[in-house]
Length: 396
Image 1 (cartoon, rainbow, N blue to C red):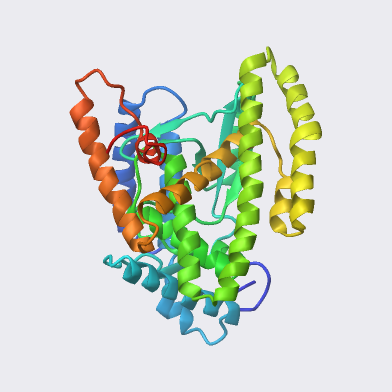
Image 2: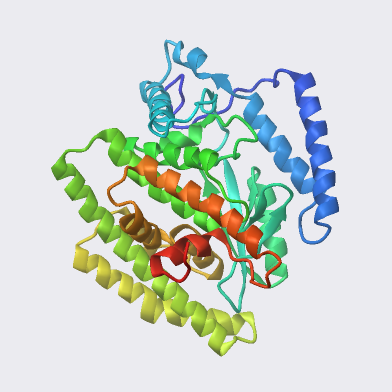
C-alpha cells in the first residue's frame, strides 16, 4: 500500500539523498572499518567490496528516512500506515519504560523501501552435515549467515557457494537490528504485520539493543523470541481467557517446533553416521527423510491439534534442506530451555527481573571464564553456562 495514494506497493521517494558531506564522511569510516576487517580476517568471503556494499546499503536506508512527525502530518497518508507508525512509537515507549532503560532515537524515522523485504540472508551448510557456514566480522563476532541489501548480490553469492558444493537457502528479511551502530528506522516492510506480530517484531529487535552476546546468534535469537512473545502479552493486557487461549495455541505451536527440532537433530545424526560421499547421495537421504519421516509426522501432529493455521502451512510447504534446517535450529533450538530456566530460578519474578537475572549470570560467566582461562578448563559459551543451570551440571 502506498502511504500517499493507498496503493498496494510502497515505493521509496525518487530523490537524491540529503547531507552528502555526511554520507561521504560515513563512507570513509566504513572503508576504514572494512580495511581493519580484512586485516583481521584475511580468509573467507569477507571482503572490502562486501563491507562497502552493505555499508552503502545501510546508509541509503538511513539517508532516505523521513521523521515520523513529518510523515504523520501528511493529510493523505494511508490510515493503516499512520496507525502502525503510531503504534510502533507506543511499543517502543512501553519497552523502555518496562525495563526501566533510557529510550533512544530508534524508530523515530521511517524509510519507505523499494522492495517488500529490506534485505536477504544467505545460509549455507555442507551437504554432509546440518551445520551453518560461519561468517566472522570484527567487533560483532560470527554469524551463521551473510546478509545482503541487494537481492541480486545475494543470489550471486548463493550461486558461488553452490559451485563449491554447499547447500544453500535464501530468505527475505523484513526487520533487523544494527545493534546500536545506527539509529534504526521503521521500515515499510514492517507494515505487512498485523498488530500482535508487529509488536512482537519491534520488541524482538529492541531486545537486541539491550542484550546481545557476541558470536552467540542462536542464544541471542532465542532470548529475543522469548522476551518479545512475553512482552506482547503484557502490552495488550489480555484477559484471563485470552491468556489461556493464547497459551494453548502457543503450547501447540511450541510442540510442533519441538518435534521439528528433534527430527532435524535426528537427521543430522543420520548424516553424521552414514557420511554421504557426495551431494546426490545426500539429496536422496534428505528426500527419504522428508517423505517418510518429517512430513508425515508433522501432518499427524497438526491433525491431532486441529491446527489449520499458518504455522502448519508454513512448515509443510517449507523449502527444507540442510541450510534451512540449520537456520531453523538457530531460531528455535533453545526455547524450552529458556522456559525451564525461568520456571526454575525466577518463576515468581517479573519479566524485567528475569532479564536482570540473565544479565547477572552473564557477568558471572565473564568472571568464570576469566578465572578458568589459565586453569586448563576449556572455555564454554554463555549458552552452555546459562542452560547448565537447568540440569545442575555446574555450580554457580
